Image (cartoon, rainbow, N blue to C red):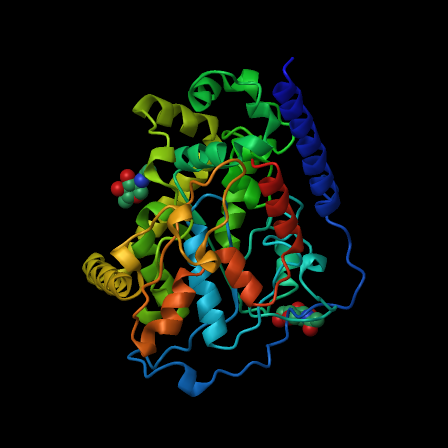
Length: 416
Ligand SMILES: *[C@@H]1O[C@H](CO)[C@@H](O)[C@H](O)[C@H]1NC(C)=O
Ligand SMILES: *[C@@H]1O[C@H](CO)[C@@H](O)[C@H](O)[C@H]1NC(C)=O
């Protein structure tokens, strides 16, 4: 073996050890049941003392409704959820709402099941307005943190695309994919998933029914299993709205309607997107295989796509079209105001370090933005916030992301 080969092997070995240690320390309760929390009854029936500042909501056409401020957003993986997160962080900041934030990292010890002890500086009985970072959902523990009237919502995406994205993004932390040697690992996997998949494999949930897993359920069930139907039913009962990434603007308009928000509250730029060349083009055949392999997510997706469109019908198709058009218009105006060149660029072309998005292990395929330098005063702050990636935004909100940063440092050292 050559010296450089041995060197690589050594680094690989070290990296694996550190990865394992990292996960063991940061996710101690994975596989155990939800620990009982020894503390007084939480904030369920309490109404939070937070009072809406009348002037913080500019004059509204819809005076008859009161904006909802108690929100639970289940941030699912690889489903356009970073864009929603940015919207929520801005909304909460602007209105002085209290976030339940994670501690040390940008998720609640995912993939451990959520417990309220994972919330930064949590004290028993404490209530919050918004909880919106990645977690493995656990209704009772989330409910314990929010007032009774909290609005629960989440987002789903076509499972073929979630799978493609997750396979690509996490392949270096899912050992099951390391054994596939072909040119097109994704295709090889989908051609014989039973051979390549093992539900006991480290991080294997990234490869099967990831959205269902995020929602707190067993991702290895068969779609025909009655447990799946009852889970879907429970999700429909718990979440007042399930957004669909493929109908993103329509989803946001429904959200605005449900929360009594303003169009201004919905402005967004797409966050955390990949450069087009790093997205595998799924042939219709592979797409079908990916949906079949992620059969539970596919069932979940179709169910909530149908409920979304039923809501659109109730809202009014014409009215929806008009609102979507307005939102797109406003967003492209904002893009012209805020973004240098008007579109996303490669990470190495982002001049300002604080605007560089987090990258997957082993590459930098996630695009970001350059902010224009000559923005009119009244837009400067809004532009900056709209363009700030998740990690930096959470840091600005006071989360000390030492675990995430340590991980970034390890990645750089080993130039993964
Ligand atoms: C909360 O409200 C429910 C129904 O309104 C009631 O049954 C329950 O006893 C209340 N719990 C507390 C702790 O007050
Ligand atoms: C989602 O619902 C819309 C409206 O009913 C339909 O046109 C579309 O085909 C559905 N998508 C999927 C993937 O089922």
